[in-house]
Length: 385
Image (spheres, rainbow, N blue to C red):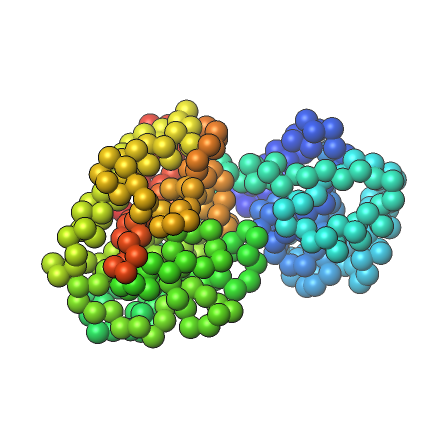
């Protein structure tokens, strides 16, 4: 049996144990990242996972691709939403009364249609249960993460040799993305809750790097359209300005995240000091990110260093600060765990997260650093340094 098929069977088995512990009879999975994680395909499908037994994959489009890509045998073509109960009944499940669904991503319209298809059934939110399964990466997944990290490091080495003052943010972004695509970059990334319209990287210089947007990030840049209000603009990077390049990039299916800041001797001294502080925070948090560490305590460690160095009000934004210093990465950019205020997740080996201490200074610019780490039995290993 190919390792990929074995992998999907293990994943579904873990979900089934979770459904049993929640006293649920089945789960309906439609969100693309979770669907792919459990079935092996990202086509337009409804994936019914019973608490015990073989799952059922019902594909709208493209059914032929879903059948070829999926790790499961029960794959059927449906042409109407109303056919779903018929296939479920034919598979032997005559009455499902307690069903799980991902309420964080399923639309109100979709939820209403499910309720109409299964009258009398009760629905329960399994969003965190599914995301929790994905939080710890298997050895198979970690191989893919490491491959992504190696390619992403190569792109940053290339762009460090390319950038020069006088280039526009757009010019730098274009070269970064051109080179990344040659290495197999997917050209996009998945962000849970923002299925469309998010740039997969930032190239921001000077004051542009202090701009925020709709996203729950410390900064976003200006962009070139109110509909896509982030990343590169036509602004030219000038000597003395900080240049921040922040890309979460997808090679194979897995995302890694890196931020690098370019400063010269003409940059304000406060930015130089803040950059040193960001690197100090990254080193301290990474050293403390061992199995058993609590994510909220790692965040407080980062804040304490920022305050001690006199940069507390600039940490992770200015005015409205982002309440985290790190986030999980994998199939999506914003996975669990989150190194955030009050979070009580305990780190385990196999968790992968991006650590990104940053500082924002109005009218000057932003600085910081970011690398992707995997938690090992002996501590956090940087994959992207």
